Image 1 (cartoon, rainbow, N blue to C red):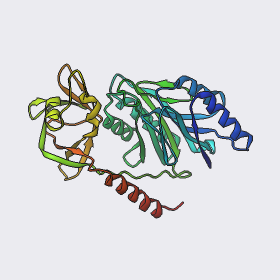
Image 2 (cartoon, rainbow, N blue to C red; image 1 turned 120 degrees about the vertical axis):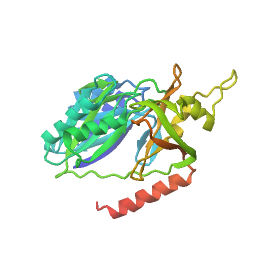
Image 3 (tube, rainbow, N blue to C red; image 1 turned 180 degrees about the vertical axis):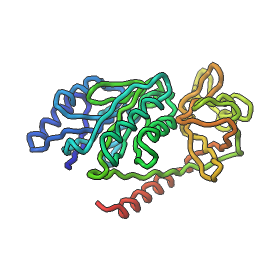
Image 4 (cartoon, helix red, strand yellow; image 1 turned 60 degrees about the vertical axis):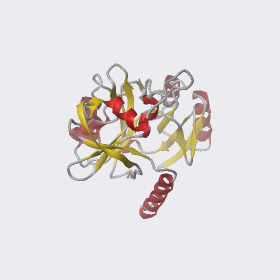
Length: 310
């Protein structure tokens, strides 16, 4: 397997770069793509379809390639890999519940390979990401490695997208599955978030929507901790800053999970989280303590890379 990265500002640039690589003897047949919402997704998808390159991708909030972060571009990774090593699945969700589609995706992965590894990207601003994981495990089994995440839209919180060479979906998934017996995928999850303040209780919720915290509207509870400006000169909506302060929810076994608020609902003072919660869950709001988190993360990935054979 051979891979190369690309960076482009338009679909035309993508086509030019791929053709230049092909002239050098590199013949990609698979791509993982990340694209700003400022670009035309359909045009980007069309390039790969016309060139006979299968692909999966998602909209983003900043595009990362190698060791650089960009804005307003399309970037990704091109592969020249045996076709019998991977499969691609795409599906729209039934309303806002991704479980059914993700279960079908998991079943597809198991049909493709005896030992699959899944990379999934999901559109949908208010999607309950925990249901994605539950669905995949229901279809593929608990032992199957899962990578991926939710798409973004340059922090607009309006609409997010996933796509394959077959088309674009605003409320659905794009999944790449590898044969783990031929291609090994590894990763590392790390977090430097620290809990602050007193312990709180979720007193009314439905899936990933929290209506009340400590028996008061969830947004009011958030404002008590972090506040927000709302006047003629300066206005910072809760939705614009809430993702910086995820809920650190304590589980009965002593572990903790993070649930980042994605947006607020003005009509009822609710918070929409990136994953599901339950009534009675206890949590503390959390913050990133500073630049030392970045240094810690870099160090952990360096240790992981050194311990992982090429």
